[in-house]
Length: 99
Image 1: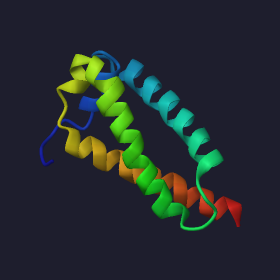
Image 2: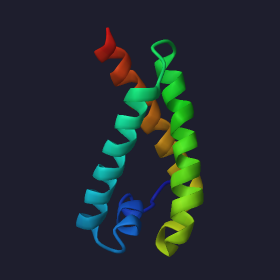
Image 3: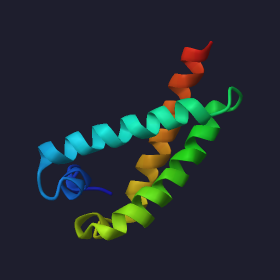
């Protein structure tokens, strides 16, 4: 998305506040990171992480986010890609740390 507001999702989850949104994103990311560290396989960890990121996106955006009007108003496509990238990065870090 060119020319978009890069802080839109942060403000959305923080109900307008970048600080609250940043804190919420950090807490949510830590929560999912712990879950992924406990569940991702040792083989194909990056690919599994990317897939898990999409599953997390479905939950975060489709279940939780739809109850929060500012989150619901966001374009889901960049949000899903962000989740996919998050899962792949967590998988990559885990793969490296586990060696």
